Image 1 (cartoon, rainbow, N blue to C red):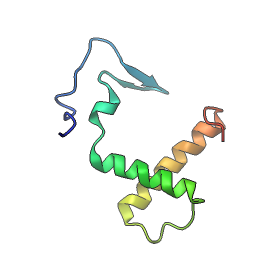
Image 2: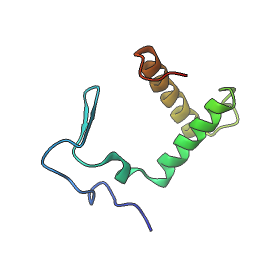
Image 3: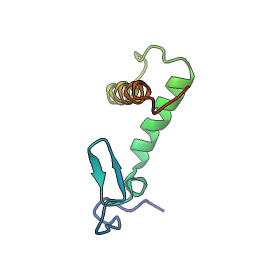
Length: 83
């Protein structure tokens, strides 16, 4: 079974999620694709294994990991994530 597409996601009359200027009128979890989940899992594995070289990753995966790491650091700097 495939998750609903963003166009088919249930939209309410009010925001269901908001964070730092980003607002979603539909549940963000319902629009996660298999590819985006894969990237989150790659980032998690990369982070857990010490955050080494990304030379073995394809360009899109390396870009996603670097972006997610940047967001992770920003959350840490704001005290949102504690290790």
